[in-house]
Image (tube, rainbow, N blue to C red):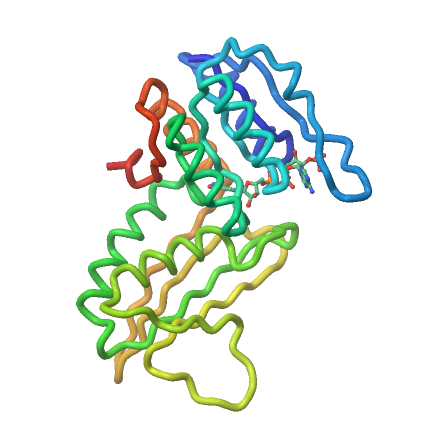
Length: 246
Ligand SMILES: NC(=O)c1ccc[n+]([C@@H]2O[C@H](COP(=O)([O-])OP(=O)(O)OC[C@H]3O[C@@H](n4cnc5c(N)ncnc54)[C@H](OP(=O)(O)O)[C@@H]3O)[C@@H](O)[C@H]2O)c1
């Protein structure tokens, strides 16, 4: 299977190495965003890319998404989006593009986080009436987006499992008690932490914590490759990592 990698930062480089070493994958090109102008408009060598590949994997920056979607829909290429930090308009563009091409949108490609979503659904259904819910995520000091894309997707899973929507409190501060129907979400940044996500369910005299720790960025690379293998020759649709890891 022929792969194009979009983005040559930390993750893009690790992914390229893994694709090169993989017995069934062939790295045909790497697209590097460049030339940001004063309006932060990005260009890249994407226009020159020959569409002789099977799947594109994006590990870059949200600023590149329109360019990537335009290319992949024009050339009918399956896409794995691993970048995080998209706004609502970008999510809508991705959803629209997925009516023309297959797309995996995965804010976290690790196997463990995807199991965490399943455990969380069960825990919320069983405990939400009596337990307060807080999300804590910790990442390295170079991470741009906060809360992390994974924390946002855990939040979405919790909201979907609740009988009614809860208010979200980002980085609690001030002089007010928490209310019962709210979810606290807190981002810590420092050092070289690869990624930690904890959902705390705190009840009267007991606490349950569901926690995932990524010890190496290799877990994300492995999952991105798995997503690319999954999406190759799938029909147009927006897929999640839970579709990939069943
Ligand atoms: N899905 C997952 O499991 C997972 C796991 C880890 C990370 N991620 C996400 O993957 C993305 C890349 O992470 P990373 O650690 O590789 O980041 P990185 O080292 O900062 O690399 C980011 C890439 O995007 C480009 N870029 C940076 N700022 C840009 C801008 N303003 N406009 C256009 N392009 C820009 C960089 O180009 P230059 O080198 O020219 O700046 C580089 O190619 C992030 O969104 C991160 O949150 C996802």
